[in-house]
Length: 411
Figure 1 (tube, one colour):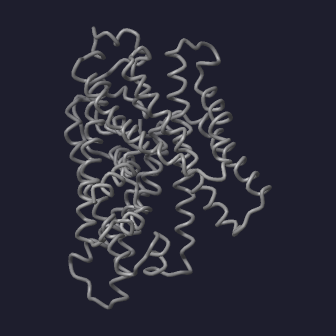
Figure 2 (cartoon, one colour; figure 1 turned 90 degrees about the vertical axis):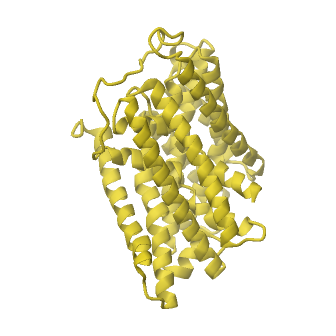
Figure 3 (cartoon, helix red, strand yellow; figure 1 turned 120 degrees about the vertical axis):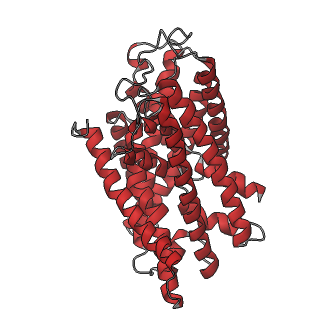
């Protein structure tokens, strides 16, 4: 159970955590916004843990080994391709986020090392690292050796949270602090609002939180890998894994936003001074983890694309063309898009709402209908309620995220 708990926490605490501090700015630019944001985080984490358990329960009922198996057993075999389409979109957005993080972090590392001109540009880091490191890794026949990098990433999240806490309490980034003067983007509090409030912009935060807790595709694997598996034992793993992740996320949100306020960027590590050694180590650890995790996500993307193409045994030429085409498109998009927070919000609202809320509720609803049990009030709340919640978060979240990024309608 300890190993399963750690692996679950490791799976949750990924790149999505980087954008969480900046998401608080959606409801306010005062430190008073931290407490309600952490409260929202706790609620979303609890709901995500609950739906994670719902998926596992259907695995236990039908002896399902994968997300696709659960779908086939409850909703039907014919529509199972919807899962593949969702995997493609989710992994596509994940790889896009990884590419953007690589550009943000490596360019900052190069500037710290004294790089100037074109070598200090974000696009140079994206193109350079993708061409020299990421692309060769994506062409490897086996990526088994890269799985250890996710472990490094987990320790990187813990380390980063500690460093963010140190910088929050030592006040290095307040006016007069040793890192304040050289900051291109100064911390700002109360310049836009004098209080926090929950309005349509709250959906930006909810969407980012959806990305942060998005691990539900792997719920069947975690359940089936648990020794002496039972729902009672697995629910303990879920409570501990999601609980630990929520605590770490709360720390990152509070310390990151508490340091920079409304100036907090979608990638919070970009906010920190290039001369800050502790922050530079955070950037390097995250950069290393993301660079070597990218191919793992890319494999899932490529498999999904081949499945949609109905290529069960793609030729070497097809594999090369698809790999090169996807990497080129992702790299170009990463160069154009600057805001990691937007990609995180889009991923959460578009896919998180479906995978975290709608799909688990549909699994339970269809399963109860197959068994012939009458729906109790609790069943209706946990199915129709979650479907409604996921639908609202998805539609409104996508609309608000897109309007905020590409128009001035929302200010």
